[in-house]
Structure formats: structure tokens, C-alpha cells
Image (tube, rainbow, N blue to C red; front, side, top):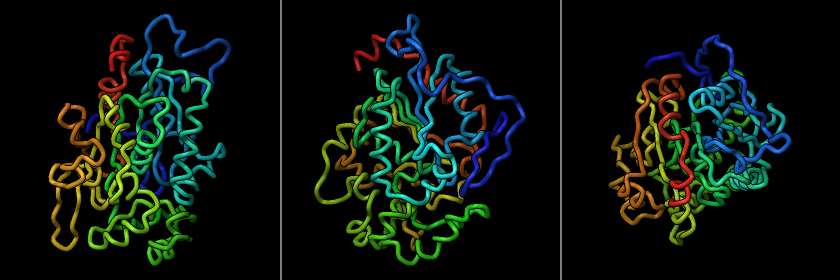
Length: 328
């Protein structure tokens, strides 16, 4: 794994970060007559980033992502999704909150943002749980539409085990026992974020009946949401990275929508699942069009090298000629 490693704090660990100075970024809101549609020269689409559990939108490691995106594709405007303007409260919201309400808030924030709302499209980058939440943005609102969605170590098919809380995450520790003992209660499903994407393949009835978020966003219930499928099919690229040595997310193959049986230790890949065969989400359609990509990142959960990120940004978040955007 080449290059320096980007830092991500929180429940999923802290990775060492180099001491190189951060590059200047454009302001979070437009100033003066700045308009996405008024640029004389083509520039990259805006990039929205949704961070993971235990992180916050002002964290240095996350901010370095925007600097790298701009260095790789000059002119990139990066917006860091936040559930509260206060960094501490934003971090708390990664563990405490109703995901359905959180996604709705993000939909409204992006749709009314003075710059993003004027863009013909945006690109999306989701880290860990932020990946499935950003996918929910695509499926539930998608205004402005995401063109390319890239997720790293996300739990698209949920988790079958809750992870140990980080030493400094007192919010997680204070609720940990209740989370694990009352997973399917209405109280937990409407308040504790990890429970809302918990999925035990050996207890699917309870999951389908009580899941506040994942069962719905994966279109697993009898009544299907056609809008979810239609919106996801609008993606130009849906790129999913799984961390090769990930022991934080169980199963790690959830990054690919794969299913996992703990008893038999058997992994069922996406293409062998009913979700794919009956195309509940449009994933089969994307796959057949060459728009669904399965990638592997070396290392453990959220161990991201600058080299990998730079290559990813160059390939998926570069300048898109207006004539191509108009034809999609």
C-alpha cells in the first residue's frame, strides 16, 4: 500500500497521518457571483463526502480528503456532510439518531445548498456507514443527482456483529449493552444508528419486521419501492471498495452486498442472491451495463493510502465534458 496514510478518528480506529500541510480549499459556500453553472472553463463536479461512525465533518483526516480531491482534480468543490454544525454533536449523531430522519435532513441540506443545488450533478464519496447512507440519498431523493458513487468499507448488506466501542467514545460505551440486548425494540431502532443497519441472516423475520433503515433501503420487504431502483439506475458508476483485512465490519463482504452465514461460515456473493436476480435495487442492471465495480483495498478498515485515493479521484471524480453530462 503506497503513499502516506489518511487519518480517520472514531470507533473504527485512528490511522497515522503524515505531517504534510493541508492544501487550501474553496469556501463551503459560494461568495459573490460564484456559480457552478457560470464557470467559463469546465471544472469537476462538486464532491459530497459522508464520514463514518465516530468521526465528525471537521476532523483533520476528513478535511485532507477535500484537499487531495482538489489537488488531484483542480477546482473540485468538496462539501462535508454534517448532521450538526457543532463537530462534537455531529460525531454523537453518528451513533445516536434516527437514520431515516438523518438522510432526510441531508437531502434537504444538499437540495437547498447555494452551490450544490445549482450543479447539474454531484459525485459522492462514502466512508464506512456513510456509504450506505449516501446510497440512501440516491435512492430517496437524489436532488441534485449523484453521478458517480464510491464507497469504502461500507455495510451495504448490514452487519451481523456489533463492534467494540473505541476507548474515547463514551456515547457508544454508555449505550452498548442496551444496543446489543434490545436490538429490535422500537426505542433502539429509532435512536441507535448501528442497530438500524444490523442484519442477522439467521433471524431475518425479526429484521424484516423491525429494521428502521436497512430492510427498507435494500428493498427486502414484500412491497418494493420502484423509486429506489429507478434512482440507483441513474448512477454512471457505483464503485464499492472492500478492505482486504477488515476485521471491524462483520462480514467484510457486506461492502459488496454479499450475504454471510455465521453458522456455516459461507459467503453468498451478490450475483447469487435474490436481491440481484430479481433486481430489487437495479444492481443487476448496473452490473450488466458495466456501471457496478467491485474493488479491493489493502489493509484493515479505513486504512486508506493517499496513492489509492488519488487514483480513485482521478478515475471517478475528474472533469466531465458538458456534452457527456447532457447525454446521460
